[in-house]
Length: 214
Image (cartoon, rainbow, N blue to C red; front, side):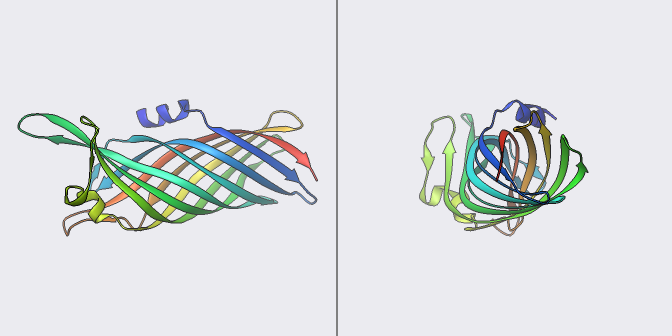
């Protein structure tokens, strides 16, 4: 519950526009700079979450009660692991940077004039292009054979994405969007025979959109 509470405090900067057409059809385009919490699940263990900054662009086609969305995103995900030695205790931060292409479908559960609620499911496909392990005490980046996390990472990134979207009409020309989502990597990070890790991310997007007719 603490993770969820902290996530709602974070501010999202979102520049968006909606173009309304005929027969309840519209198009939505937005650029997002989206803070999020991410972690790594290894077996039954959830690593300590890490706050990241992600960004991307999205385009949506709205038709009746359905929304079809495609986009391009730059994701940074990771988690903290506590290490204990005979002399000191410290934390290691494993980070993965990903170029991702989300494909989403949303359906309206509540469809009113000034308030709409959508359930969303999506698939995220991408490539992990940078992996790092950082000693948070010394700020040193491990490389080579020391970076065991880098040796086990899968370059392909495939994830499922679930969430809801709340749309509130503030005035005639403005709309507030609230979009909490959770993204879970399904192909996982390949370790040795005893474990396998998966990236998981939780974020809440907030944006005020200006509505324009075409």
